[in-house]
Length: 188
Image (cartoon, rainbow, N blue to C red; front, top):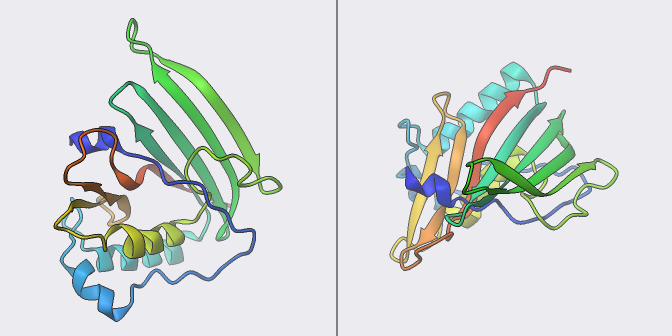
């Protein structure tokens, strides 16, 4: 799907405190979200339930990557490490595709640890998957459908992989939301 090449990673925001985040939308939001079904047929509310079940089975330690790819040949990948429900590191790579050989040329990189999380402006916010679900429900899936095309996709296990929207009149690099292109459990 071409929208995946137009993904914009989520902006930077960091909170140093561990917060209990409710990923369940308010009952007034359920009617809006109930009709949104992921690429593999998983509704938003079922995807949240799947996430809770996956966490109870595998623990709350994992690593995931978000991505941004522009039509002009640039992109970035942000990797977030979560240990026992707390973001402990974030790394970022900004690259350009060399037109002559189709290889990535690194423009900028950084690596943050728990001591300096959030000091860099570029890249996805250092947040947990729980917080991504919350942001998805409250900021991305509730926009005006008359002026925006909403996207919600899931992996085969029901885990959210894409959540966001594109304004109807926009042509290039207009996706607002999150694209999870890699996820793995971390065994402690």
